[in-house]
Amino acid sequence: MSQNREFVVTANWKMHKTVHEALLFMESLAAELALRQEKSGRSLQIFIAAPFTAIYPLASCVQKKGYPFHVGGQNMHEASAGAFTGEISALQLKEAGAHFVLIGHSERRQLFFEDDRVINKKIIKAILEKLQITLCIGETIEERERGETEAVLKRQLLQGLEGVAELSQVMLAYEPVWAIGAGKGAEPADIEKAHAFCRSVLREKWGKVAAEKVVIQYGGSVQPENTSTIIEKPNVDGLLVGGASLKVDSFSEIILRSQEMLAEKK
Ligand code: PGA
Image 1 (cartoon, helix red, strand yellow):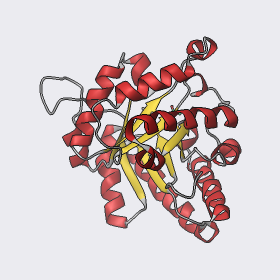
Image 2 (tube, rainbow, N blue to C red; image 1 turned 135 degrees about the vertical axis):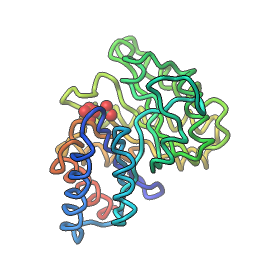
Image 3 (cartoon, rainbow, N blue to C red; image 1 turned 60 degrees about the vertical axis):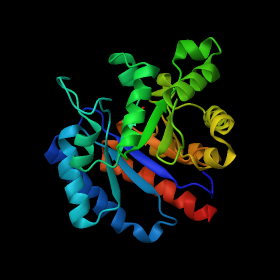
């Protein structure tokens, strides 16, 4: 965590939660955080990457009640509209109330065969439509064992962001594929090394000032217990949380531990 960048905690619900469950979660998260407000220090940004069906109800709830959450999608199609059965456009996401979209999650890359070229098209489109994006990158265990981690990250970054003139709508999430849903996250020192490397790639292409502002979240088996050791690293600017974001208890604990550390750093 750094004094110069905002801190972001993102829930990635994947294909979990009905509309009813999503709204219940939001109400109880808001209540839980309000209850423990006095403990919190510098505020952090809370993002919820929801299933498509829950975006509109959640975004309406945020607007009506003034909750401090950003609602977004987990994927989108790169075209404006057309014969793409089962897909969703940037405009449809935005109209539903999405503020951001995850692009290139490893489950999209592996299970739905998205490559850097298509991920790049999605990013260009999302930015054009004024959505904030979180580009997810990370190596597989085989790539790691072959010593290719940095080469993979560099390729995913440079190809994914090709043609992006400036980075103000861009956040990154470093998610080593082998740490996702594994129960044990990557080692904080390895996370810091990967984040610092990503920032150096950004610096080389977009310059120091722009690179220093980019929020780089870590994802992969984040739990309340490993939150503090991961976020104390200077290039970790947030957390992308899957499994532990499905329960209010664990997700709010991750947020509160992050807030406590932000307060200490103040
Ligand atoms: P996990 O998922 O926290 O369950 O490991 C993270 C992600 O896939 O974004």
